[in-house]
Figure 1 (tube, helix red, strand yellow):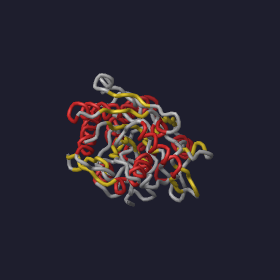
Figure 2 (cartoon, helix red, strand yellow):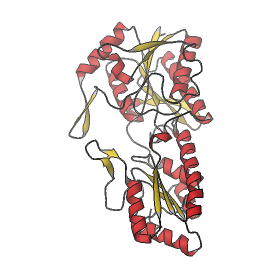
Figure 3 (cartoon, one colour):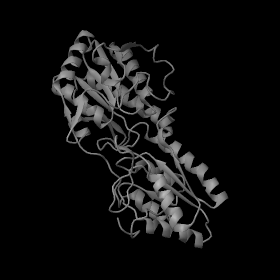
Figure 4 (cartoon, one colour):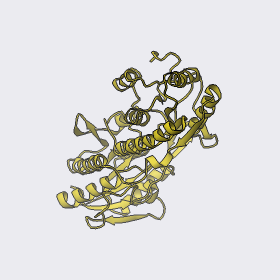
Amino acid sequence: MYKQIGILTGGGDAPGLNAVIRAVVRTAVGEYGMKVIGIEDSFEGILGETHTMKLTPKTVSGILPRGGTILGTRNKGSFVKMIDGKPQFTDLPLGEALANLDILEIEALIVLGGEGTLAIAEQFHKRGFPVIGVPKTIDNDLAATELTFGFMTAIDIATEALDRLHTTAASHDRVMILEVMGRNTGWIALHCGLAGSADVILIPEIPFSFESLARKVEEREKTGSKFTNIVVAEGAKEVGQSEIYSDAGELRLGGVGDHVRRRVEMMTGKESRCVVLGHLQRGGSPNAFDRMLGTNFGACAVRALANGETGKMVALQAGTIITVPLSEACANIKTVPADGQLVRTARDIGISFAAPKETDL
């Protein structure tokens, strides 16, 4: 049994991170008699002059409803270098980190993050250091788990935004466009579009045409609906075109919503507005489901370590928390099936995906 374990959070923040941290601490201390050290600012906290904090049931009291992470997080770090567009891991920071973990008397790690953070965690595992991963992405695009915490809260926020835009669109006879997160997948756009009564949903998995999009707006006009609500994932792209980046230097996605606004306004003559939801989706308090899922993940991660598992990630499958190898957890992303149930349902109720021919999948 481990005497002391460490926990860190990496990548973008997500509602529910503090729920996981709280559950890890309460389970480790109360159930297994372990001590817990929180590592600040992701893996960077165990390089150079280390930055850590002791975590006890008292220090995590009251953090369940809080958004963000009390440990801090980073999207970039010293462990991965991009060479020819591919991530490369270097031994130098890993060796330093392992030495510092030994000095800190941390015997195992619980790592909360998406595919990038968990890929670094796997490098620790490959060097013989015990590690358990916890999946974190509001995009819900990790293939090994049915759901990730933060996703349901993001849908709630996006749906509320769409509800509010709906009344403005109807009042002014406008086309309203809501740009939501979703680099490679359209899960947030699809779910909030269904829940928030969107007329058009644009997702990365189904390239769209402006002709089809304009046709949908004009068809609604002819049937007496003088307004149109469009949800677009930030990674959505026109047929034959690449994604739109707000900052080419950093390859940061963004701007597709405003691009759609300009083209729709030009093609239809309809007054159009765009709202970019951005980080509002990942900030703030987690909803009840994400608090529950984060708590479940955290407790099960400690149990996995206590049972001698390592190099694994906790995952939700068929309502049960299981563990899967980290190598499998990060191997593939989970995309929206273009002919899946939710897409079919959306089309059945009249939502367009603006494919060149709407029956195209």
